[in-house]
Structure formats: C-alpha cells, structure tokens
Length: 176
Image 1 (cartoon, helix red, strand yellow):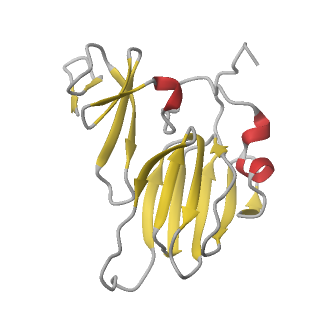
Image 2 (tube, helix red, strand yellow):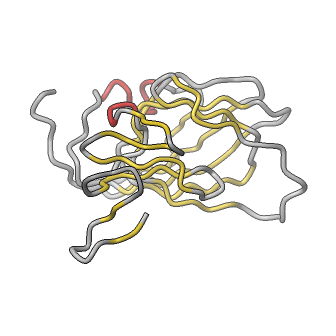
C-alpha cells in the first residue's frame, strides 16, 4: 500500500483509492478495501465482508452488534466517559465469541495472548500460529473500527486484553 500525491492510499489490485485496510495481529497487511471491493493476497473479498473500516465512513451495522450487547461474556466495561470506553476482553480456552462490532478506533493492550482464529462475516480470515516464548510485557496494537467479527481461542490458556476505545463523532447512517 502506498500514498498517492493527492494524499490518498493505493494498493495493488485496486483501480481507485483505498479507504480501508486490515492487519493481522503480527502487523502484516491482510486486506485492503476500495469502492470496488477488497483484495486479500490475490483474492477478492466484497467490501461489505471486510471487518476493518476507516473512521470517516458512516457506521453501517446496527447497535445490537456492539461488543457489549452481542458478546457480553467476553467484553466488560471498566470505564466509560464521553471520550473513551475501556473494555476488559477475556476469551476462555476453546470459546468462540458471538459475532460483534467495535465502532470506535482503539488501542488494544494484550497482556495474555493466546492462539486465535479470527472470523469476519462468518468466514475464517486467519489463524495465529504457535510462537516461541514471547518477551515479557504486554503487546500494544492500534485497531481501526471493526465490522462484524468473532474470535475463537484455540489455545490452552485464557486470552486477556484491555481495549481502549476512543469515542468520536461519526456521520449517522441514514439507512438505519
């Protein structure tokens, strides 16, 4: 993916500007989205199936898919103000969350990683591989808003993270 002279992004396989990108937990580019659809390693993925979105688009999914409503067993509020929502995210070994969304961009602080399967729109997007012993300390990742997705813990221990969602004003979806 690269930035054009006009300040927009472009990516191989797209004829127009790219407005969204999804990254694997390791930070590798996994998918890109444009008005023509999305591309993933030579595959075409319709843009309505791409889980990661940019923040300048209206939110197309219903509030019932918000993580707190759709996946309450794995998402708990630690703090909520007009500017942030801090979630405690726990996925037990062998558990798969119900499909849910995260409307706000966020910082994810993973203090107990686990091997996972990540599904978007009901389709397996990737499975994390076993890793050698990691350096101690949390992993910190920037997360764009996520459309419908679910995570399955395929490890023998609990997955735990703190997700700090940064609230912002977003254009309303007139269709909802």
